[in-house]
Image 1 (cartoon, helix red, strand yellow):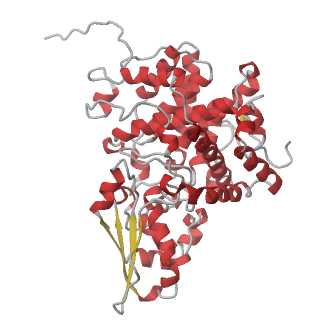
Image 2 (cartoon, helix red, strand yellow):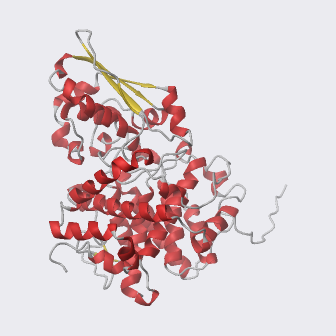
Image 3 (tube, one colour):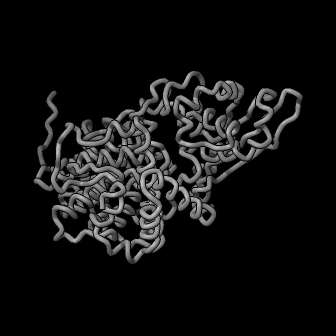
Amino acid sequence: MSHEIENVRPTPDRLLSEIADYVCAGPELSALAFETARYCLLDTLGCGILALNFPACARLLGPIAPGTVVPHGARVPGTNYELDPVTAAFNIGCAIRWLDFNDAWLAAEWGHPSDNLGAILAVGDYLGRTRPEMGLTMRDLLTAMIQAHEIQGVLALGNSFNRAGLDHVLLVRVASTAVATQLMGGTRAEVINAVSNAWVDGGALRVYRHAPNTGPRKSWAAGDATARAVWHALLALKGEMGYLSALSVEGWGFCDALFRSRPIELARPFGCYVMENILFKIRFPAEFHAQTAVEAAIQLHPHVADRLAEIERVELKTHESAIRIIDKRGPLHNPADRDHCLQYMTAVGLIFGALKAEDYEDKTAADPRIDALREKMRVTEEPRYSYEYLEPDKRAIANAVQVFFKDGSSTAKVEVEYPIGHRRRRAEGLPLLLRKARENLSTRFPPSQVERIVQLCHDAGRLEAMRVCEFMECFLPAGAF
């Protein structure tokens, strides 16, 4: 029996229209959102600058074809590269994400909304240098940041793509496509066309984030997503068609083909909720579910550092998501493996009283005390932590650590419910966030340049009026002014 399909072009899926309406003529954004975006911009760029010091990251940067020169191309902060905006987005996004040190959003689907800056900065700088008549300012860029955070974060609230085996960078591609198309002057219809193609791409598999395959692709996956987003935006502006029922069409659409026939729904209307409540990684370059465990371990460091050989076991109480993502036993094969291992991060905190990006490299990992302590760890779920992780009024990311010794004694149980980058600890965290930014920027720039950048991000009026390409000049290598 034949099954005839009426070949009539559909109206856009509702979600495509809602995303386009939001970026083209969305609601007024709050002063708090813009203030937080300025901190986020500074922090995210600092993370990218720090990553340039790691050879595994630096080797991936530059033009995809060696020796390629793009006059008036988009610049990559901290380097002399001038690239086409697609390649620049990959470069910037790769550096931002490399050390797992930029902001985070934990929901049904977790992710790192500042990953979208790979696309936003590349497009902003490229337009500023090639189409100055557009007058693109940092106010425009901050608006795009808030919108990208919101699209990615609100989609994550009620839709768990990782449980379908798809990586969360899918949402980076969707959000970056929307704001990049709008920044380049795209119409509502062109935003819909571009975003529909972002969904048609499907999703990368999460295989590179989980044992036994954890590897460095998890550190450049977001850069890849932002590059693809800029590509879709450029194609839409050339008139490339969209696929208006890309999500909902029976059988072939995203929901049926890749999302177990579940509809994709918005948990709340688009506004600026996500930027206002973003989670900063302030003290540790660590997967966010482990942040409070490392903080607890460092508190215990003075009580265990001289008694490591006497430890019988270490008990870690955590939440379900941490167990599912970063509870890992057995050998760890590379830095990407280690920064997604709850036991490794906790062990480093207990032994050294600190956790730095360098601690994931082979030199530190060769210390036999780390694996010996990992073997003594017992990770169990605390149901209250799992509940409060998902509770909208709490959004806790709790962990507790307690050390037991062979003589029967033990340390206190140290419980940390909210990491220092949580909105509930924002007043405590912001001074440390600024210190983190200064330290990260100082790995590449002289003190005067660092202070110029920090003070600029403090001055809302001056920053927002500045052209994007002028802002990017602040991140040229020392002596390039």
